Amino acid sequence: QVQVLEFGGGFVQPGDSLRLSCEIFERTFTTTAMGWFRQVPGQAREFVAAFWFGGDKVYAESVKGRFTIFGDSAKSTLALQMNSLEPEDSAVYYCAARSSALPATLQLTSAYDFWGQGTQVTVSF
Image 1: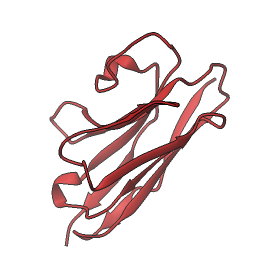
Image 2 (image 1 turned 30 degrees about the vertical axis):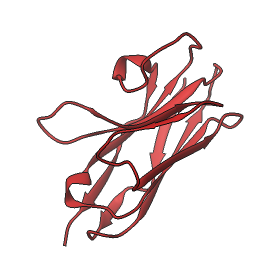
Image 3 (image 1 turned 180 degrees about the vertical axis):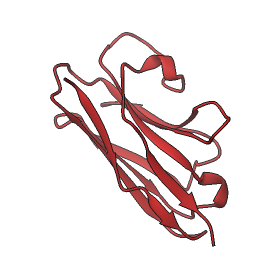
Image 4 (image 1 turned 90 degrees about the horizontal axis):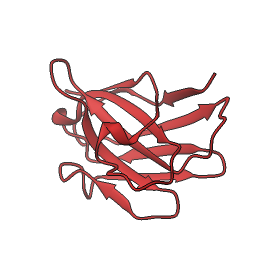
């Protein structure tokens, strides 16, 4: 059974940095793209960053210049380096993976086939 697991969430202060990691276990498919989303209670899941392996990276405007996404296609691992964190970045962060090579809009949750359970990031004094 495919498992997507996120690591690295925690409690930090504004201005701090944090790195999230994601791994896919029992993978039975070729990962073509991976991404990060986040969600706060009562709101829809929000796109953060994503890329097609071997392709360009895409970022939400709210994190551009502060967050960096990177990964390893052979290992199907993903990371999100988050710098200059703000209280507004507090959310549960989800890792997602896509198994199809067909065109898709990576900013949409519907582009992904597999999701992790999420890891909490809290930014506060």
